[in-house]
Length: 143
Image (cartoon, rainbow, N blue to C red; front, side, top):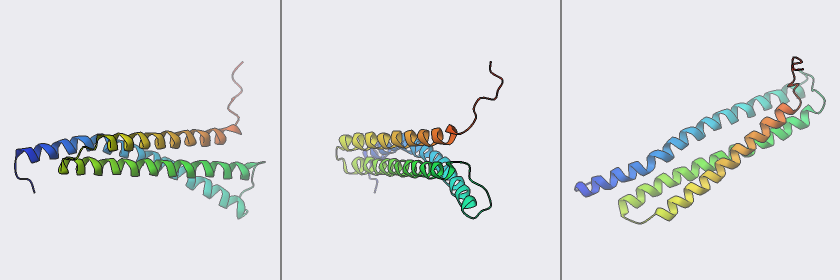
């Protein structure tokens, strides 16, 4: 229950503290969308090979499995980052409403979320690298 201007200022401060993590969450959800799309395509390709609707290239099944592991781990770390950011938002509001100093908790949650996001993006990069290793990237026009 808001009883005065001091309470409103506390709510405003809590909202300001939560805005940046909320924008980060939007970015993480975009990354998750890309990752789940890639995982879905990997699953469809493997299923097509397994059911005999398509022939596998040499070494493709092991490459698909390796890519799927990378994507799965990247999704796990991205979800972890999102959960940590949600916790950060909750703690920002709890600290603001209760007047409890939570700066160290917020900093720790943000650092952990960023480390999880860095790990997710690194795994995504590894998956893209495995996916492109067998492609002929030289179009024959370079001399």
